[in-house]
Image (cartoon, rainbow, N blue to C red; front, side, top):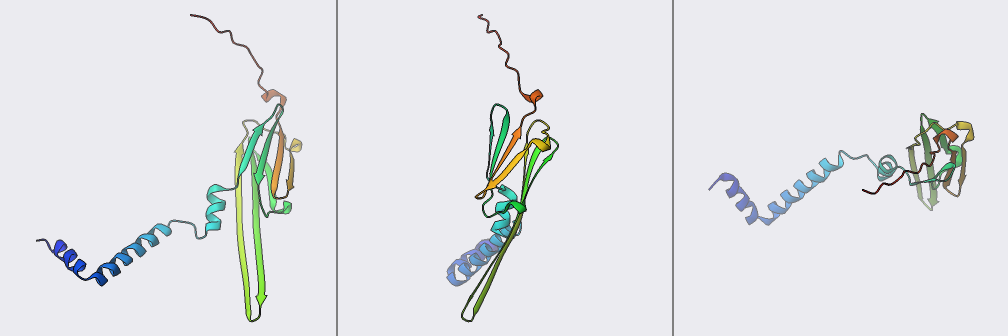
Length: 158
């Protein structure tokens, strides 16, 4: 019988050693997995997923709606870079509470950015942006030369 098989059989005979080793292996597995992740769930949400965005095209405009709960208008930046709309924001919050002999201060910080390719170069002075109750609305007029002309194509019978 091989020594590995013998040692595993003897480990099973001693349940305390088996479960201790099992726990250590699981701790190592979780620790190794977590080492590749950002440090906080807040950072994961902001960096990887960004924030929810709806994009709609109307006759003459592109309308972008972005959910930015808890963000003030001073902390939001809307820019045009190349043929893309860029929305970036930063959130800083501090909550302080004191109760009898206890004092607690919680802080959260995060910045995020979302780039939305438009397929055309908008004129920055024609964009309109409004933040209302945590929802950003951006209206981007499409230049006249980007509006496709409708052309009927004849369908032949074969």
